[in-house]
Figure 1 (tube, rainbow, N blue to C red):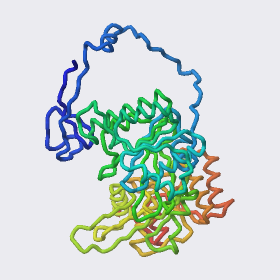
Figure 2 (figure 1 turned 45 degrees about the horizontal axis):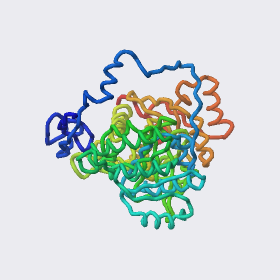
Figure 3 (figure 1 turned 90 degrees about the horizontal axis):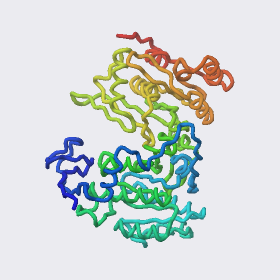
Figure 4 (figure 1 turned 60 degrees about the vertical axis):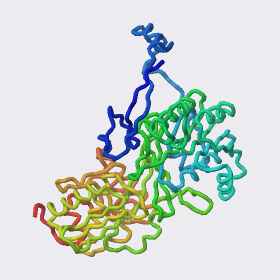
Length: 479
């Protein structure tokens, strides 16, 4: 018999401790450590004896050279272009994907549309729900107009029962909603605990690899937006997708965080409606729909999300502080990077924000992580502080260094083409068009900006140049 040991596992991050603690040392969460029974390896088991006999002989292990040619795995399309885009062009057989998102954000709606779209393309599909009854899923499918899709539905949380049904039906695509509700009777831990989530996810992923089935697992998220359960679940699966969006906005963002068969920085944009999620073919137009006339503190940033250029409005407000310590509120951007931009403007340009509350917002609820937004944020802050609006048809992009210099960014040509397509004819951009750009390429971008398409360019070399360009006042560096 295997020796049963007791482990103390944090239910928030999955860290194992030697003894019980009131606070997890890894994630600093309180009262999340639970004692779990763990069966250690049995030295007398046939597998362990075989390992002992073959130790050092390399039995059963084959190697291949780097120059070997393997065929590209085929892709399975779901009929939802934005979903397939984030997955790298479609789903890959024998793969597993974890989809996370806030409660009620639309994960079940998205996956029901995806599995129905695959079923309409003659892909045998199964939807297993541990949170809803079959009647609820059928009612949602009727509301979305998907009742004709030949998707097999089931409401079950017992892992062994689910695996028996999948082995019998042999589907090509399986949705498990959600992994936190699935449990196995081989463990005494309660459903939803780290041990249950880890064991059930491992069994489902192993089944996908052996049977060649595509399995999509739905995962809950914690209060800070991280996928709940141990991080080992994310290591088990081939892809991790995050479904984001603000409750007050009607659009949703599907972002790839991990993908072994495609890019990891791709996004898909959807619009939530009464009949489900609708694909957005032109996200830039969606984010700029309600912009109206240019106002002080409003700047359009030409960014890149994955492989597509994306235009989004950045809004800033600098109000006199009513208390001793000024407030810094940020939505959709990194608060630490905002502090850096404020420090550069004060140190290199002599613009002080010490007596003002600063509010920064990325319109539409989109979250930006690209450093190329530095120049747009600085322009929004300067515009708000001096109450001067930038030209209405103007876009801004560039990275600001601590020295105050504006550094070039990648894929400048794609940003400019997207801006031109939407009618923008002015641009604030760094001195060079893109990082590592050759002379011929830099000349091509210059012609694209000022020659062939007639865009008026404002070349910004330093943060002081940006202040001068917006306000018309000469700023002295190091003031």
